[in-house]
Image (cartoon, rainbow, N blue to C red; front, side, top):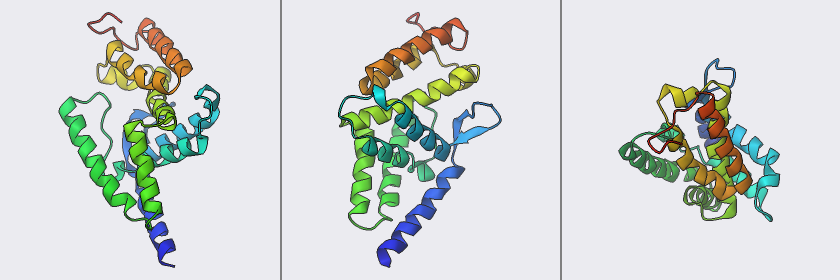
Length: 200
């Protein structure tokens, strides 16, 4: 029963992701979403938007990445996407250390597979990883649009800053990249985003 014991221990540790609060709120603005809710939403997005993925995509692999990718926030916490570069670099180191600890809780073989999926997502080395990353970038934009600017307005984020993140969406799905660019234009028109120095 040792492998099962290890798997149950991992699953119980993963439950802690429900306690990690993100910057974004729920669409009804009643509270901040947690990272487990975020991961679920991304998986649902991948299922619903699969027709916009590259042909031949392994959707099961995408879903596995989306369920696993934020588990590291159990140790590292969530950091605002537009934080200063130094903070982002520290976050990356903390997340790698968390991945080392968390995936090692699983039995050998499963541990390596899951860590490999996490690394694949982080490094965007496959079409599956690129599509998964597109979901991860698109979801907060959708939330900000329906919450009156959300974290964009709260943190003074500009349209130019958001446009830099659209490249990751377009890299996973050109159609969703176009959708995201159009959404940013609407956000500027509606006053939810201010143009940056580039005048976007």
